Image 1 (cartoon, rainbow, N blue to C red):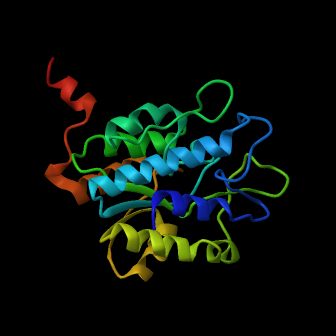
Image 2 (image 1 turned 90 degrees about the horizontal axis):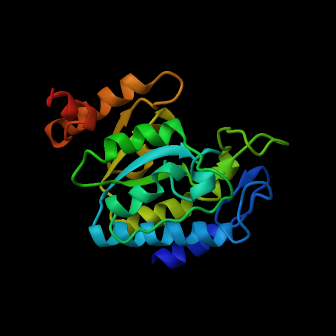
Length: 223
């Protein structure tokens, strides 16, 4: 498995009611070559992950319409694209959409913690596409069992290829899925729907002293 072959395999999957950002183009928001940009973003990211020897995944449920649907990167919105290359050397990521940058609250919380770690995780989702409600592409819904079955072999290949040994699940949907892989699984509350404080506390409990002080906390000590 290589970044190129993995992304190529992802791009071949087409499902009704599901936006595959490596295959599909949003006629409203995307640039003409948006799928190619997102494929390149993910190839660069996985290449950097491989070079860094990352063995831990932070796993969410699926791509959101304000985040990964637009960027092609799990738990990452357009406001964090410049930070990707800083946190993962070599992982240059470009905007694939027209108009102003769109931010996502979940991505903001994820990256606020990630950037406090010296050893960065792979960000991924149980379902690496964006499932949406029928007739409304800019909504979020949970994937179905049939949809998940279409990507399970690729998820398994990804974990084996990168020698993943630890999964930190962002929410219970991911936790339920992760148990099947036979690796260390830990879980924190998803930051959406009022879960921000519990998410931050959960990450602090998992990482302890290896989690550097936040920028706001550091600034506070200066006054």
